[in-house]
Image 1 (spheres, one colour):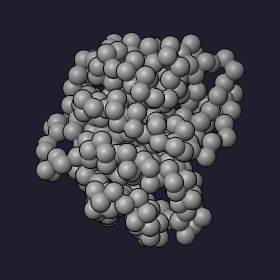
Image 2: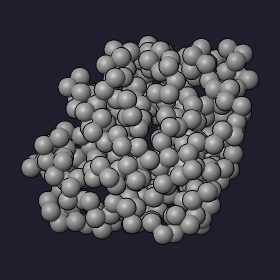
Image 3: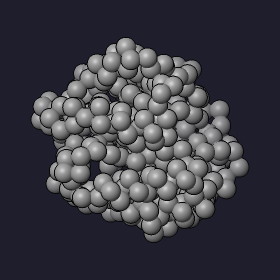
Length: 322
């Protein structure tokens, strides 16, 4: 079992397969994707080797991320490679959903069990303003189809003071009859969004206080669950999650590691640098890869240091899919 010196166990791998994204979200890529790598992204065989090595070290959940992972035509094969790995029980994806109705059936057939979709506003005009794309209706239709197919769906909304902070009532009305988990994520500072962060960061604590006052009950997290504090209410089909990275002890429950699309291990979303493990992946030596992962995990820090304004090597969230 992968375990660090603080006793945290790592059941969950976030595996990026591309850093390319076709959206230009205000908080991530406001000027669109700028190619600054050689784009030598992980191959299918490398994805299989990574999944196998992590599974043998106790990882049971893999989330495929980007950039936007569906920009890779072989995404169904990547999902299948992870789903067919002994020990992997859950295969998830994080997507902007820009062609979700066209893709979701093939993803589920390949073995997808969970999906996170980014929707920062339920107002079509605001959605288009934030993302640069008028795709809200398409994404909502894709979510409905995913629910029909039995996929566990979570919707991510980044809290932004001047964009969507007033939309809580609209989101609550949606999940009254829709069986998703809606997760509000506090805007995080990255290497290239400091001014935007300063203008738009909003705490999730007022939302938490409102939920509790209105009878929402906090749910105990599963060992493979992410960092969200989740709440349920008997009058709502959906749930609410809050991801508050600036809250006390946020990192104490960390259970995930990240591998970039270029084959670098990131011990934290905001670590100082990615650790190159690609030689162990390309050599097809699972034992050596497992040993290297175990050794490198010894350098994982107790916290992300975001409170000190430290963002590490993360210039924008598309680098690692959040």
